[in-house]
Structure formats: C-alpha cells, structure tokens
Length: 96
Image: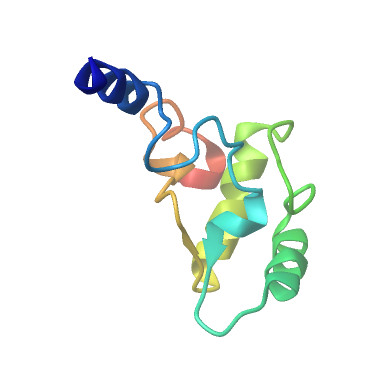
C-alpha cells in the first residue's frame, strides 16, 4: 500500500522540481558572463524588445530582430530558442 502511495505522489509531481511554476521572465532567459540583470534589461530594450519581462505581443519579425541583436552582443538564450531556426520563421526578413 505504501508503495502505491509513493508511486502516485511521484507521478503527481510532489517530488523533485516544484510543479506548475510559471516560466522565467524574458530577461532571466538571457545570459552573458559578468553581466547583471539590470544591464540585461537595458540591452534588451536597446535591441528592440518591448520590455524585459515578456514579449508575447511582439510580432515575429520584431522579436527576431531583437533576438538577433542580443545574440550579436554575445548573449545566449538559456532555452536555446532561436526564432530564426524555427521552421515557421525562417522566411522572416530579420532572419535572412
């Protein structure tokens, strides 16, 4: 019986990572050694992001431009997401 309870608990996400956590803010997904969070936020705005917390309302081309700018400045996206590599976005002007 105890074994069944442990199995159910482990399947429900009660062990290990905290379940149902919100995704990190946008600026928390960009890293570069020696660069502070405040500097990352500032550079994101300079690169064309709408804000440093979430950019879901940006059109794909604008997001690609801003992302390419961050990559050119030596930043890496922790999720390794690159909109220009996405099969749906390779034709964007910013990705050419």
